[in-house]
Image (cartoon, rainbow, N blue to C red; front, side, top):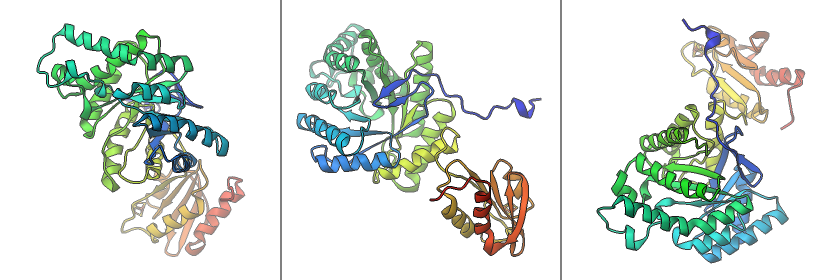
Length: 396
Ligand code: SF4
């Protein structure tokens, strides 16, 4: 028999090392960080600055940009400067590719974090169209990668900046595919190889991601990574995401299925919801996932019944009106329940309740206490008055 008190409903996050990215910290018990990426061409300084600012203003805490050429890397210097002059410093992360180590070194001077994809570190002589690898050869390639990456790692280490080791299921190096197959294990080993190289150079500001477009694959990869890191006494934070999740309702469901499942299992320190829509659309989904899991509270929590034959008013309309009137009151929980039968019991945790009482009337609750019965057409106004009387109202 487990008593009610013994059931802990809080998600206790996996303990991770804090990694600074500009003025934001990923891991180390800090709130799960929201990220997104701009679509603009980084060479277009003005548009990029505007897009970064727009995302940051709506809650994107780290903004990613792509850096396909040296010219793009240099443009980041101007973007960073413009942001500092006209807005404020925004933590930036740059995506760079293997054959651009010089590009990575240049961009590392201007951004706070560099993302590398281990799958892109392939070497034609060793890595293309091969069907076998000896252990010796496998190690030799690892050594070539180490030498290639070394200047970037040292630069980031000495500047106190961060690196994301961003493995993608769709782009594993051939030698990993040959040795471990097209599997979560291959993804994890790919990340571990890069982690070991960084650690050999005493660089620990690492964030790891293992994205896949199939939810079961990414779930298995992140779970295995968390388990392996525990076994190896590594405690790097994890960046969660489902790649190519698509758009619309299913894109959101798919992203949530992957990201929220892991967060609920204590895995994950930062997230990006990748939608085939404008990046601003991703931010509210990220915060919605975090709020639903009780990991961050950035908006009013509405508890509303689905309505049924007992419902005494048009619940959809009323919820809409209540939301319009109160959605700026971050921190409150407000319940809208169709009837008295199940209403008060099921909204027990809410700060305020709006509950159908009898035809034409609703009851307003503070916590579990019924405060007053009012005509339905005055319901929203009276709810606002009650919140005001309690000193919990702020002007929108
Ligand atoms: Fe129906 Fe009342 Fe339950 Fe709402 S709270 S679903 S109206 S029984």
